[in-house]
Length: 145
Image (tube, rainbow, N blue to C red; front, side, top):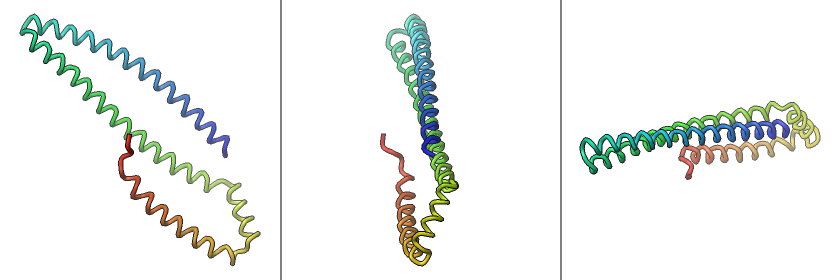
């Protein structure tokens, strides 16, 4: 079970590192291309309309680039949040479907006895229900960054 978690962690770390390096390369290329486009637009507007309009055009271009980057960030963050929720659900199901865990549970029932175990399970179920009700209310809020 732990080996699978470690392998998943290694794989996700490697993927994140590759994606980050690709994103950094793309960001640098986008910055250089945008810089040349802004310089060309600035020179063109400067010759046609004057310095004030040229500066306003440059500001408008950078504002548009900032809006595009902000939208991409919000969309990506939402995708990552959905993926994390799905991974948490599948991890819970995988742990409960583990045969070793089921075998250990059966051994615990045999060792303690079913009559002594029922009150313990009732209290544990109540605690789990309270924990889930509190956890569900807090997860709807956006995490602070």
